[in-house]
Length: 276
Image (cartoon, rainbow, N blue to C red; front, side):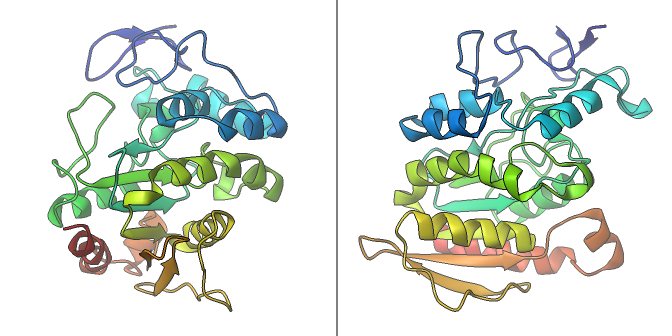
């Protein structure tokens, strides 16, 4: 059954077929689909940013993650039963020439599977966008749905794994199959970067692996993750990019007080100061 998009009012199926009018959908019926890890490597290798965003959004390389995201889209939570679900991978989003890059793992319950925008539609996203707005990196304090007018300022968000995994635990094979998308996206935007904000240990490790693979000088031994940790990465051309760590704004962390709003603001504010 089709349901109406809560912002546009247009009817969509769940998952949303590419090219049917979803706000900001980068893909259409002609977008090439990756069916396995080798396809991801091949399609990512020469993609520009628009074609990368499109190919990511239709990727089917990991059978378990495809089943999970599409089952969630069809068997909806009661509170969202009347809404269409994006039900596809979540591409990077924001400034194509960012000074700040935010890297993290989308939670299993992440609303991006519903809304079509990374870190949008759940409590972790509510925390993140509110903080981004407070420090001057987003135009609105909330991100509700693709098409709501939200914009990031000098900032881009990317998911370390583009499908929210069951129990927040992608397998190593799933992580590695998805990695070429992340490496290519970072390669396409890294020339303007001044800071990388890593949400959680997973985001921290993914960023270190990715920048090392792109030829950056990464400190050894591996910098230890803890909230507000910093590490300097040196680009092949000599530029410095500062890696910043934050506890993930998951419900577990925010409900227990392990991460507070001032703590998140401090890390994102540090990134914002470098972006000016």
